[in-house]
Amino acid sequence: MNVAFIIQRYGSEILGGSEYHCRLIAERLAERHNVEVLTTCAREYTTWKNEYPEGTDRVRGVTVRRFANAQMRDMAAFNRYSDWIFHHPHTREDEDEWLRQQGPWCPPLIEHLERHHRSYDALIFFTYLYAPTVLGLKVAPGRSILVPTAHDEPAIRLGIYQEMFGLPAAIAYNTEVERRFLTADFPIRAIAEETVGCGVDLPQQTHGRGRQSEEAPADDETAPSEPATRSRWAPAARGSAFKRRHKLHGPFVLYGGRIEKGKGCEELVEYFSAYHAEDGDATLVLMGVKLMPLPEEPYIRFAGLLSERERLQALEAATVVIVPSPFESLSLLALEAFAVGTPVLANARSEVLVDHCLRSNAGLYYGSRDEFVECLKLLSMDDRLRTAMGRNGRTYIRENYRWDLIMTKYERMMAKVKGRISSEA
Image 1: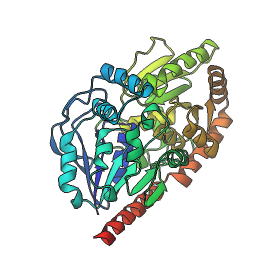
Image 2: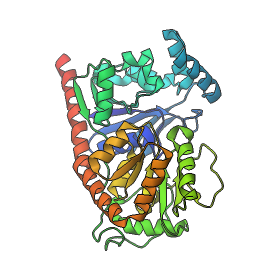
Image 3: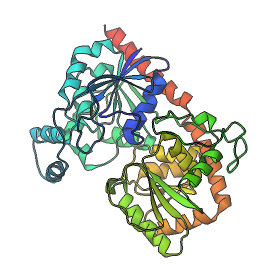
Image 4: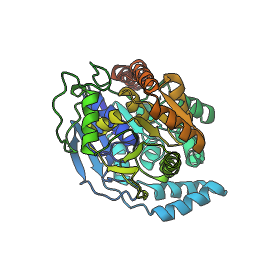
């Protein structure tokens, strides 16, 4: 099949969110289908500045067509407009203006879809929120599959999304929690619906956690552009390399992703400082793009934006992985932690994260600062508990998030969409 993915930004250096999710799926489907990614020239989402060159590119074996944005985002002005529109009566024209201000605003991408949509058997749109999805789904709804990555937030209550969720021929939900939310609140008319999520690799662990596999080569430095070779590297080898490289001694807890207030990081720093004040001996390590200041404390370390390989080394080396975001539709951070046998401590305000913890029995969740402190003390001190949770997490991934399971669901949805197109021709 000829398949197009439509996503707001795309690149091998984006290691989180719907963009990372989209890339992982696109790379897998490209092994069997002709895949193109249609995206903008933006590298980061706060301004949508055109940084990649326009035109065709290849990213890890996938063809990428980039289109220039017509404008940049003024975040301060957009936040003021959002505050107004979420709390006051407004018109449909006001919502259209909100969508334009949010960006990315990329008319050439939509024009490409209008001219060429019939050359694709399936159009797969990632994330409900942005203009390429809202406008692009109108072009050829019968060919379209939506991966919403949705959760309950003020934006999703705008009228433009009531209309949008009724358009796609198929919807790939991340979790049953997301599926229940969307089907209860929106007029879903898709001919195919699947709870899919994303595949996660289970690294080799032939000698158990804490020892190196015979197949793991010696540690060395890895450039950020080097492709990951997950199946070749034993978890213990990755863990020891990360600790040596970052001079970490003793237990540490890890967060990975955008380091910003909206992801719960401000609260995470506050809660972890309370844990440290009660004689907690772990270090907090944050990896990813820093979009907020961090306190200059010896027990808080910023590891920066890591290569995909070193990121996986960090996940395995961590004593506990913290997932502080109150808004998640899947959380690849949690799933990848489970895959390498590291327990998770998650924000209880996210129904998705609580569901992962309960179904896997591989994590705890907190609803307050005191609960965070007590859960972290328990996890950091109880080796047997962490080991048991690690085994449970790997089993959870094996039973629910293997790549063969995920790809079967995508193939099934695409076949249904193509079949309806053929029957209507």
